[in-house]
Length: 640
Image: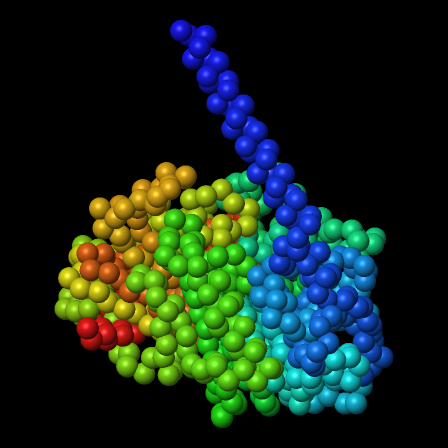
């Protein structure tokens, strides 16, 4: 009887194997005999011819440029240009690569697709400069990224066959910065530009610093890799930094002061990093790299794109939109914000971040229903596109919303005040005297920014569960009761603190958190075993280096134990706290190793010595005369 059962099992398994082999074989036959998969290198070669040019700039420097020209010559096609410091591999006119994300969407709709190595990178001549400053008073041979974009566009429309004379410009992150630069003093043929997660100001809010505080772990690996120069950069890959441990908290704590970062990490290979540390305040060097005052004479339609959970350039997207709106009245200037980490709208589905589901493929929707129609309208004359000032995703309820302004004109400012017993309330404090909460901030034991081991940053940390921080004695926690009804915050946040420190400098980290109810369902499937009941979802967090409370160019020490107001703006959110949830705010003085440690003494942090790092008692006041809280922009509930 057992033998019969075994024979039956063997026949069943053999049949399953044969079926799998047959399915694989038929799939291979379809792939071989039929059309290549859309977006593959073979598909791209079937529909486009690859050309490579070295385009001369006004000073004689030539920039390496790749052009994919549609084989369909039934009509002239518009050009879409991206300028990048990240290479155009694989080089060579016979070498194609798979397309993905936005490039695939555009390729399938037929555009002349152009990508260029910026000045001084890979195949392009000249010297590279990080976030090269805009030059408002250029002579005939003077250049910057704006003039290089202008010269490139001029050459393309005059020399690339089969173009219709209309150009679009877009890019994500650093290429987003080049898109912003390229729309200043717009070339007449530039009809549409889309800076996406663009850099706007590396000291105030993007990438390198937030409110003057250096973002450490997020940048060490990046700038080490960026600084590498292989012998054959067009074909060899640059090597990244080898971290001896996956535990970034331990690695950077052992490094000690950021003063040791060059000898500990870079070993002299990144002059840019040394330059950053040589400018500890918002001096002329940083101010020259602030693009916002220069976003003028923009004559094309602009669609700025960002992610609510972008850990790198959320500030840049919001500020680029605002500056473009302010300095170019009358143009079409729109904002798109989705529930994404850095650049994730340009690839993938965008249906979740970590354990937080958005219940829709938001990135696919953006590429097909927002980005492509934008370029089709302004470059191809498609009349089905409807201009919307702000098309933004509301997290919490997980839905796209449209507004005539951003923030919506109907919001009203209210303050969530810190109250006794860790309570958080819209009711102002009534306590007299020195009502406060306090903690000891120890630079030797900084508060971690994530519970995951990471030498950079986990992409999902902007929505990470904050229970690991709430349990620490050096983190203050304020919380509402369960909400009776939904409440929506739409727009920037503003931390308004009254604080004191026994040191002479301090960082202040403020985090807004959505506390899920205890019966909140776990994901299904749930491969990581996360428990969502009571999950403290980070909605927004930011840091302010206290020495800059009177201006980023005017660092000043704190007077020990003296009550001092500290106010700072935190980038926008659009989030609904559902009924039954709680609103929480956490306050702390370190966020390591995302942010470098403040010694808590008023010294140049870039040259701080071990003895400069000292414990300090931090107090946050919550009295009637010295209140502390978080100002939020409340959007009225929609009528049923």
